[in-house]
Length: 291
Length: 190
Image (cartoon, rainbow over all chains, first blue to last red; front, side):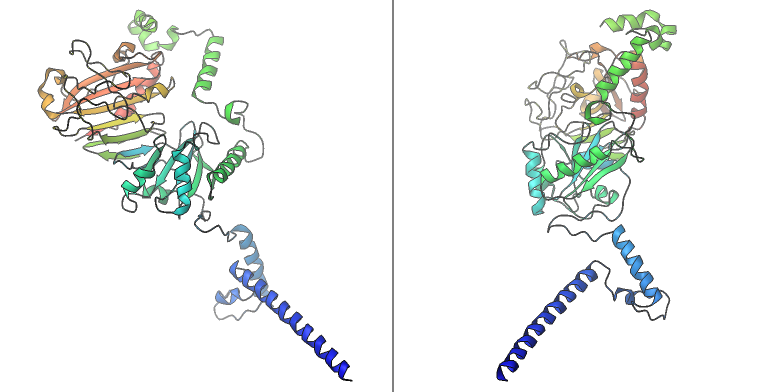
């Protein structure tokens, strides 16, 4: 009899441990769901109609649960490593940049309407994660960039929020460093480091993200640049087959134009290239070409 | 985008770079760390642009050293329809070598006000719009194949300026000069 009682006590104890474990697991799941914005009690904070009492079991509650699931898919609460920026909540158009350099020069950088892609590196002089990027830029690791003829522009906040002397110490000599809080605002950059790849001819952002290391940024941007060679419908753009997987650079376009002109019989110095000069002084153009 | 500084203002055309700065850390007789500047032509009378090799002494047209500590630092405006490299000379050394046939580089350099009375700056008033015939490959001291330059010295409200423009292709001047003038039309001097 005693043995049976002891055995039952042991079984009850084991079952108790099991139930406690299940409850803890359930609580953890609920907590995670709550953090993701899909908690079962979240709808109580925002009733569908004033005065309505909703519960998960009601029609309105279930509708809100479905809506929460949709919102979860649309805007996931992505978590990043400490010190790494989260993705921007909203998409923004590309902008040209204006600001000052660390040595006090007033500078404007063309980003929209240029022939190349531009990689904007939004950094800070103080953040620890940014230090790796400053070092990578200073040591030339950023000289080979993804995209087409990509230009790297390092952007920090303006002199009202950053120390020009500190930025000057970190700024690479072979890339432009611009101090502009306006650029952070224009692109909606919440924190740094953050990277945005802009397609110049189309003036649109083709890739963006945050990373902890420069190699991660390179991978992100390489993927974005590769994706950007596809039109929205999935068909490859017409401008293909050249360097960089798509766009022609200045020299390539120049060569193509020369080929087409030669094919049409228009050689250097051809009068049709100088219609005004041909009427004003036909001989001058030829003399210039020889110089 | 509009930039402004040191009494100069400009609005960049689509896709253009621009910069306004003062080279106020130069020491007389030492070349600019950012690259070469034009030197006086032999004889010193005729204005000459160009891109001498790095290490050339920075000189003003009158033959004096530019950026000497005893003088007031003067502003410089650069405009370009290609990415301006961070390291370059006041007259575009280090930049014009990078530009293609469609490239345009514009430098507007203010000189010491005391020079405004000199013969070199006898032309008064804004010298633009420029004409196609103002450009000549020989206006570049160090010739770069295909490129052409134009240099003008002038005064504006008792301030002395030098305008130096390089186009990437002399053959394409009929296309490039209007673009030069469009960019210059946005420049304002106090």
